[in-house]
Image (cartoon, rainbow, N blue to C red; front, side, top):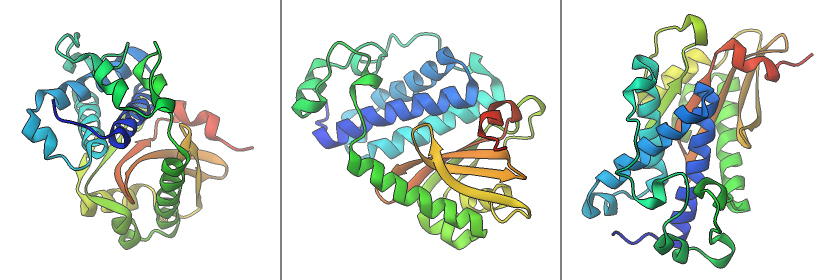
Amino acid sequence: MTEVSAGTLAEMLDERQHLLEIALWMFGSESTADRIVQETYRRWYALDDDERAGIAAPRAWLTRVAGGICLELLASGPAALPESAAALPEFAAPEFAAPEFAAALPPRRRPAMLPAYQQARPDRAMLVRHDHVARRFAAACDLGDTAALRAVLAADAIVVSDGGGKLRAPVRPAYGADAVARFVTSLLAGRPGTEATAESVNGRTGLVLRQAGRAVAVAGVSVAGAEITAVWIVLNPDKLQRWHRP
């Protein structure tokens, strides 16, 4: 198996929790969210050692794959996911992290008998980095600055939107920094009478867009290094009620 550094592994475990939260937020089903993450890791372990070794940023890769799976589900429904994760190594299953991975972690990160997504906690440096990048994104959206959005996006970034919920608008997947910047600009940026603010979304800095105090969109972001690798947008009014302001 390809060796993974303790720092990289800690980020991968942390990303698993983030992906679970995003999938649950978008689909409202714990079982669907878990299956999305299971399928993401199944695809990771379906790669051979050389392919995995060639992935410079595993967190970014996992994020892009999870985003693609979300788009598949939005288009075809949960039945598109396999029911079983039997082919997954123990590390990627929901119950426990594999012992060889646990040994690679620093003592304060070594897992006890807990689900893998509860074992890792994002360290302060990771959260500060995420906050800085997310605030650049929010500021660019508030200004309607497509160039500034492009500058904060990874070259192979992806955007995933729920399309508006019950009366779902056509899902328009966008890949690549240029396409994502245009998509986000048209959907979120520079809209008259709206206020775009950086706020906590699923425990990390994201973006909330409001009109007359009512939330019309909430966006979470996944960050790798100093770039955003994925933008996750919720438009469904039923999911936005708790974001309204008096």
